[in-house]
Each structure stands twice: as structure tokens, then as C-alpha cells.
Picture 1 (cartoon, one colour):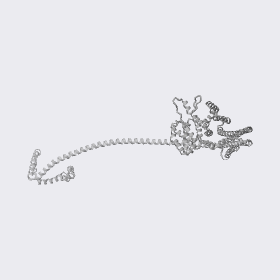
Picture 2 (picture 1 turned 90 degrees about the vertical axis):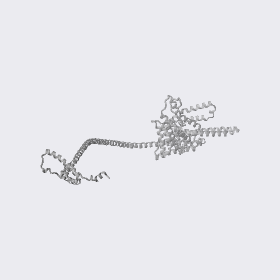
Picture 3 (picture 1 turned 180 degrees about the horizontal axis):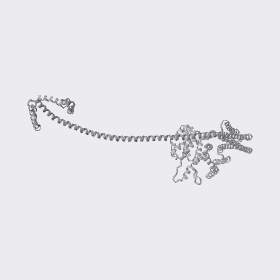
Length: 627
């Protein structure tokens, strides 16, 4: 149970205390109430105790009376009447009560004073705390006010900044829009001008094309007339010739040749009616005219040789007839002479076929035909003459003679290989056909040509010549293939790359060129060599510029044929070239010299997009030999 509740339920706790009876003027009522209770107390007191109390009170009164008597005069006897016991007890208890109430009042006064002191102390603390709180509140208020002012200033500054940025952005957009508008206006103006120029250029081009077509048609008509005149002369010559049996080529074959020439020119004439003529068409027509003229010249030469052979045959027949009649025992000589004439005809036929191959090269190289033909025959005769291999002195003499014969053509041949093929890629195929025609009949000449290729361009092996210790720059550049003149000046790099490009294209054209129809043997240097070269160069570490150059030229010429023959294997090797080898070429290529690399990259990208390699420009198929 709670202590406070227990005390409250006690008898003392149920007492009611009245502290304010004196202040409220209830003294008499209070004393009367107390006196009623005191009577009850007196009744409960024993007589002995009461007598003692009464005696003590009387003694005190007597002493008090003595004091009073000294100060106060004697009163009347009525006042000195003896008090009753009840009055005495009331007086006693009143005094006792006064003695008890005085400490209570003093305690209450002290308690009140203590409470006042505590109250004043707490009030002082409260006042101090209130002042501190007020001071702190004022400080916080000032701080908050200052902070709010700063925040307001900052917000104002931010707003001003945002406003300034917005204005600046608006100005920037306005300026950009103005610039775009001006640029767009300029572009539109430029497009209008460009469209007008294109239209004007198109009109001029149409006029020029019409004019060119007119000129080309005139040239084609002239070519047709010249070819018809040459063929008419040839037919007239053949018709009036008496010794038809002694002709190297029969009249029927000659007529077939001339018919093919006329048919080819007429094909261009028919084309001119429906399509536009090209310069190549006129060039081919000129070649046909030249071919018709060469047929006419060949017929004239053949008729002269046939006439002389007929005269010689007639003379020999006359002499042998005379000998047979005079010497019957030697009749078998006639058969020997006939066999000799047959061998001569066979030799002439072979030499004419060789001349046909050589004429293809001479016709395109535009050189003097007859002197070169005679000198080439002389060179060939030195190689096949039986007495040329009898001893070393004669071999040396024959070689010097051959060198003297071919020396006038050395510079011209080099000029053709160095400049014409690199400048006009399609020119490689006529040269290749001529070389292949000789190579297929004379393998030893082909070996010499191949060795000459390797000496001029070691990258056809393929081989990158290393630099030996102690080798000078000029020596090293020389073995790399650079041309160095007599004054020691090294040719420029782009010229060197152009020359190497010409050699590679000619070599590649030989690989893909078809053999003549009458050659039954295999290709002396065909596509297998091309596949071998491509595999070998991919196994070598690339070099700057030259590797990209030779790869591009070789694939541009042989890629179409290699893809037809090797199919998936060729696609695999192209994939290896794109993914593995080409990044190596880029790594070794210095900056600013990416021309060959860019050409090779463009070629590989086009090949990847199309999935095949187009035939090279100027490619000559097997029908070339039948013209």
C-alpha cells in the first residue's frame, strides 16, 4: 500500500487544520470550540491531578497578583472573588494553548519565510533564465534574420544569375538561329547556283557528247571505208594471183580473216545506231583497220615469197628432171628435195605463228614493225642455230651479237614496262598475251623473262631484300628496286611504287592470260603460281607502302580468276588478309603515307560487300587468239 494513502487514512491524517482562523477573525469561535472540548478534558482529569493543577495556578496567580498590586491599586473586593474550577482550567488550558500556538505560528512564519525565500530564489532563477532565454532568443532571432537576409540575397543573386543565363542562352539561340538561317540561305543559294551550273554543264555535256558521237561516227565510217578498201585490194590481189598453191595461208583462210575484220567493224556500226560509241570502240575499229592493212601487207609479202618459191620450184624441177634423165641411178634425190620443201614450209608456218604473237605486242607498242621483226628473227636464229653451242668462244660471240641486236630496244621496253602499264592498267594484258605466246613456244625465253622480272622487282618472288652490314643507303635502295642515275640521284618514292605496280600487273596478267588455242601444253606460269605467291607474301612480315601496293595490284588483276578456280579457299585467304594481315600493314605504315593502304582497304571493303572480285579492266579472254 502507498505510504501517503496509509497516512491519509490514519486518525491523524483525517484531522483538519485551519491555519487562517486568526487572519479571518474567528478567534472567539475557535476558542469557544476549544473550551467545549476542554471541559470534557477536565472531567476526565482525576481530582488529585486537578487539585495539583489548581494549586499551581493559584500560586501563579498569587505571584501575579503581587506584581499587579505593586503596580496597580487595590480593586474592589468583588474582583477578588475566588474563581471557579472551570475558569481556572480554562485559563490553564488557554495558556497552554498559547504556549503551543506560538511555536506553531513561529514555525509557520519561518516556513512562510522559507517559502518566500525559495520563491524569491526560484523567481530570481526564473528571471535570470527568462533574461537568458530572451537574450538567446534575441540572438537567435538576429541570426535567423541575418540568415534569412543572406538567403534572400542569395536567392536574388541566383535569380539574377538564372535570368542572366536565360538571357544569354536566348541571345545564343538567337545568334545560332541567325547563323543557321544565313548558312541555310547561303546553302540554298549555292545549291541554286550549283543546279544552274549542273544544268548548264549537262546541256554543254549533251552538246559535247552529241558532237563527240558525230565525230566518232565519222571516224567509224572512215575506218570502215579504209578496212573495206584494204580488204577489196586484198581480194583483188588474191583473185588475180596465179600461184595459189604456193601461198603460206590458203585463200579461203584469208577470206575468213577479212570477213571477221569486216564483221567486227560492222558490229560497231550496228551499235552506233542504238547506243553511244566509246573511244575504245574507235580504238578497236582502228585496230581492225590496221589488221586489215596488215593482212593486205601480209598477202603482198606472201604473194612475193610464193612467186619466188614457185620460180625456184620450177627451176629445181627443171634441173632435177634434167639430172634424172641423165643420171637414172639418182632418182631418189627428188623425194629428198620434196621432204626438204615440206620441212621449209613447216618452219615458215611456225615462224609465221611466232610473228603473229609478236605482232600483237608491236601493234600496241606502236613501234616500227618490219625492222624489229627481222632483228627478232635474227635473235631467235642465234638461239636455235646448231653451230652456236660448239665451244665457249662461239657462245660468247653469239651472246654479244644477241646483246647488240636487242640493245636498241632495251630503253623502249623498259619505258613500256615502267610508264605505260602503271599509267594505263589495261595495257598489261596485250603485253602479257605476247609474252605468253612466246613463252609457250620457247620455255627457255620464258625463264629469261621471269629472271628479268625477279631482278627488276624482287617482290615478285616474293622477297624483301635485307640490308647487309656495311651497305650504304644507295646500295640498299638499289637492291630494293629504286632507280639511281649516273649522278647518284635516287628516284622519288611514288615513281618507284608506280614502277613496281607496273611490274606486278604485267606479271599477274601473264598468270591469268589464256594460252593460244593451238597450244596443248599446260600454262607455263598459271594460276598455281599466283596462289603460291599470295600464300608466300602473307607469311612474310609486311613492309611500309610496298606490301600494300603489290597486294592491291596483284589481287586487282588475278582476284577474279583465283576466285573462280579456288572458290572457298580463296575466300578464306581473303578473310585472313582482312582480319590478320591488313592490321599488320597499318601498324608498319607511317603517318602521312597511307595512299597504297587506303587503296587496298577500299578494295577489300568492296570485295566484302559484293562477295566477289570483278574482272580487271582490259582483260583478254581466249577469243583474243582467234581474231
